[in-house]
Image (cartoon, rainbow, N blue to C red; front, side):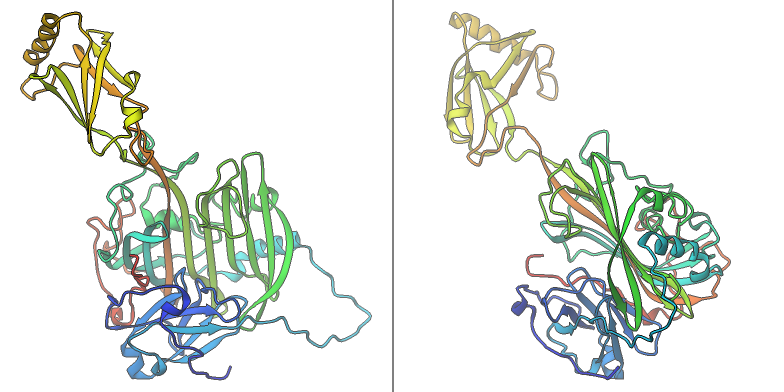
Amino acid sequence: MKLSGLLFFSMLMGLGMSVGWAQQPEFLYGKVIDAETKEPVSFATIRIQNKAVGVISNDDGGFAIPLKLKEIGEILEITSMGFREQKILISEFASDEVNIIMLYPRTIELQEVIVTNRKKKQLSAKRIVKNAIEAILENYPVNSFSTVGYYRDYQKKQNQYINLNEAILGVFDEGFDEYDNESTSVRIYDYRENRDFERDTIAEKPYNYTSGVKVIDKAFLRNYGGNEFTILRIHDALRNYDIDSYSFVHRLKYDFIKNHSFSKGPDTYLTNESLYAIRFRKEDMRYLAYGTLYISQRDFAIHKMEYALYDKLKMTPSINGNKNVTTGRLIFEVITEYQRVDYKMFLNYISFNNSFRLMEPPKFKVEEMLMDLKRLCFVVEFNKEPEKQSALIKNNYSLIYKGKKLKLKEIIIKKNQAYIYPNFSNVDERLSFFKELNTSRNKDNMIDAKLFSFDARNIVDEEGNEINVPTYIYLNQFREFFVQQVKPNVRGPVDSLFMKKDRPIFKNQPIIKPDDFSELWMNTPLKTIDN
């Protein structure tokens, strides 16, 4: 591969994206773009040549590398499935703008065909997948090893990052012939709650299926007895090939083939290796699941697995998730990619994304209800001005006194207040009523609900928001781990300074930095002006 310079420099303004330069000055920033479609190349691998360290591009193709690498004169190797490898001199990176790197799709080259009397047997898609699963213990490490990488969890709201948490983690794995959740240990080298991005206190709360404030609609996310990183790792169906991972993969070794149908897609390449692209699909009355396996034509090693599950009965309000699906709401999506190191396959990255429903407080509501003892009426104060026609309908108010609904005489609307006059036969009866309510108030100035209660419904504000009705929005929760270093044949240290799996990553965990910590960095997403 010839060494080339940057193919194109540009601020992201020219690509329809604005970047606010509140970026960290000790980093250089780049963005990987498909040279033909001009679309971002998500999850491209960016490695420093001759060093076992690098990063993975974000969903928008963006990445960050330390500024010090420019002074050293390092070379970046950028690879992504289906594209030609690109090598870039870091010394050519601009320090004050986002550097655009174009990747060109790699076309399938026709090789010479030697005519013989023996025809090469064509394997079916199902047979290729079966061979790949049977070869897992041959292609993936069974000896102990370590991976070090950048972990993050965050949510996306209107396509903006919120509640971004980041960490550098060291993972000590005993090998694929051991149960991951029982034998793997994790060290936290560094972490932070990134306050440069918006924090939404409601969205970052735990799932609550009792109150319904935050739920996965029509689904339930198990915690598998662990924290955020444990949840992420259990969704690596390759590492957990013989235990239950997720629907409808379940146990990859036993259930995946019988639960799905398979077909061949166009072959592709990763660097110089030819890969089968095997599409799979599962569909029933309610759910649709499908994705693609990228399998080596040489030894059936699975390089990449894409899996997405949709609820067909729910229309999606966004375009998040698998772009091939146009109907149905995304429940979750998992993308897992492995890389070759010393003839074995090691994790390169895993991205797990599930949608969830968030109940937000009503946009239009009653702030308080007061008694006006001069006018002998009730004053209902709204948080904003109501639409007058609906606010004047008497049946939209319910005043219950000693178990009976009061009739209303008149309603007057003044800006964001409604003056409600109960209907009494005479003045003495009206005075007696308000006197009883006034004297029955407790020390908190509240009236006993058994004596009197109030409710308002079917009233809307000028924007059409119904009173006291919460709004529901759908967001996406992401958990991702991008490997920066792979260390074959390494065992974990013998001490107790490991992450507590039953405790959130960002809560009272032991932190210890390794000797080579200066070679690691957090690949924080580019912060746009909208953020």
